[in-house]
Structure formats: structure tokens, C-alpha cells
Image (cartoon, rainbow, N blue to C red; front, top):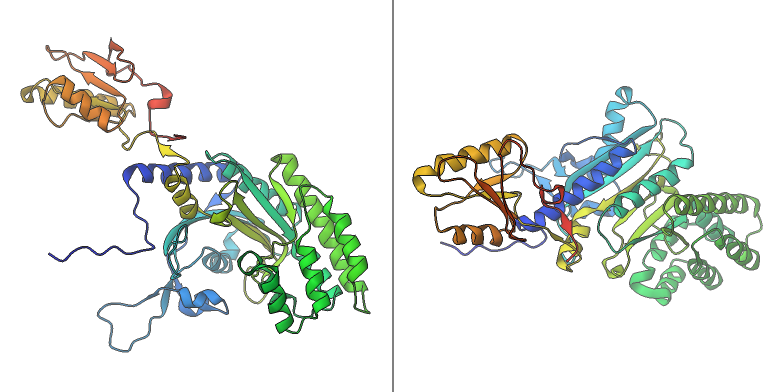
Length: 448
């Protein structure tokens, strides 16, 4: 038999790691639901021309084709590489059935053919929330979405997160004020600041025709950061000292609007979830469609992982115009890989069972099976011991699997007793009434 060759970029968790992933997904879903976001699921495939669009992600799309298709037939479908493209199609297709503003969350796998590395996979879970309107979207939703995401991450056993936020109006007004015409192209260079450093960004900008003075001003803007509205004065001072264009009114109004929005966002998020948001004017989010608030979220002490949750405000979800909205996305698999790989958390046990029902001998296995079924009927996960070995061996079996309780049927076929194998306490029990402590009822995420 040929040796199995592993495929990189396609995570396959152990049962205990899968418990961590499931608990993370469940927790995130619960927080989203508590804030009134309704769940949708979209198909895994989209027409290839819709997926490809003008995005650089087009080269990462996995195309679909039947194995027995005629030779030379081109694939017409592709697996979605994020949840935004299918969501845009969903809103466009079902707009007459949707109540706006539409608050949706979506947790699904996506596929992306990028180079696998730590925290980056080719098949992975994303968890998105968006609020989309038909015509206008009030600015308060930009704060609300950030608060919901902060609470979703805060509900997980993580060291803490920092949400770094910026505003594209502020940035665009400033860039235009120092004479940069192609703002989107300049932002794509600034978005590489962590990768290539200030000198690399400066070199890219000047190669694109940006003056050295404007490039220096852009890099100076990117240095401004504040956990409150204090950044505003620094931006205004820099603006006053670096503005070069003659027609200043348009860029200045844009800058002022962006500053006001960013102050409202930072202070609103920190009021709801103290110590979470930081105004960071280096956050660019190089995607062209963002028009207002932009967000990137980092795990404290694990900043090398990069952003675990990002997004922003957009004026048009659907190509051709309409449906403004704001959304954020958690890279769930990226987050889980760090949680389990770095020992931040572990599953309290690797199996769902809270009880092993012992077997006195093989002739009485039916007695043990009936006790197990009575427990299951009341929602208590359990399993019957695989062998009628000595009780010490059956206890060892439970201990190796992390199962906290062993049930010993009485020799006369009655219910018998249940033992907490951690404390050694053993008490008479009724299978129609006994309950494990709430903390033992199901596996959970714990800190080692």
C-alpha cells in the first residue's frame, strides 16, 4: 500500500482539538445571536467570473470541474475564498425577501490557494458579521459591529485582544491634502508597513510618483496612535504643517468627518468594552471598497500571528452600487491553531462522555447498556466499558479518556453506585435522577 502523503494547509484536528474548535464556534455564534444577528449559510461555490472579479485573490481560487468532463472543458465554478463575495450575491439575489437593515452572521469553511504557513490554511473556518442597509447606513453601526466582535472574542479564554481602528475618510482627506491623487494605490503600499518597514513603504510610494514630502507626511500620520480621542489634535497639527494642495476645502472636510467618526468609534467601543480599541493611523486595509471605519484585531502577546479579526465600512456591497454596510470577520481556524498550538487552552477531556458504565461480566452487559440508555435519555453522555475487566482496569480506561465518573451496576442488576474517579468519592445512585456537576456535563475549554 502506498504511503499516505500529508497535504499542507488542510487542518485535521484531533478529537480534543476539535472540541476546542467546536466550543469556539459555539461561543462566537451565541454572542452574535445575543446581539440580534441572524444566521445564514451560502453555497460553497459561486460562478467563477463573480469570484474572480478584479481582486488579487483570483489567483487563489480553487476551480471545480467534473472528473469525467470533456477534455478541454473550462471550469465555470469555484470554491469561495471568503464569505463576502457569496454574501454580496445573496443580498442581491434575495433583496426582496430581506428586511433592512439586514443583520447577518455566517460561519462557514472557505478555500484559498495561498502558501500554507503557521496560522494560514487552504481550508479554514471564517466567522463574519455584517449590517447592510438598502440606501443609507447610520454611523452607529460601525461602533456596534466592533463592540459585538470585541465581546465575541472576549467570551473566549484568550489573553486579551486589541482592536486597532482607523477611518478611510480621515486617511483619504489627509492623502489628498498632501497631493496624493491615487489614494487607493498609496494605501496598498502603506498596508505593507509591517512587512517592509518605513523605508520600504517610502521607496514604493516615491516609485509611484508620490513626492518625498508627501511620503514623509504619510509615514508620520501612520505613527499616530491613541487609546482615546487624543489622536485628533496630533492629526490636526500634522495637517496644518504638511498640507500642500491649493484647493483644500474638499480634503479638509473629508479629514474632519473622518476624525469625528474615529473619535466616536474609539470612545464608543471602549465605553462598552473598556480597554479594547486603539486609534491607529497605520491601519490601512488596502482593499479598495472600504470607505469608513477599518478594523484589525490582535491577540495580546501573540502579535506575530497578525490580525485575527478585521473588516470595515463599505458604501456598496453589490457591484454597480447600493447596499452600504459594515462588517468584520474572524479567522477562526487561524485563531484555534494558535490556541491549541501554543498551549493557550486545551479541552477538559477528549471525548463527550461524562460517565463510563462498568460491566460486571459479559453476561450482564445488557444491564450496563440499559443504565447507559437511561442516562442518555436525560442528556448525559456516557459509554459502556469495552471489556468486563477488573474494575481497576475499567477505571484506568475512563481515566485515560479523561472521563470523570464510573458507574458500577449492583450484582443483583439494580443501579448500584457511581464513583468520581478524581476524588475517589463513591455513592449510591439512581440512573433516572443522578446528575453530574454542571462543569463535568460536557467537555469545555480550560487553561492548562
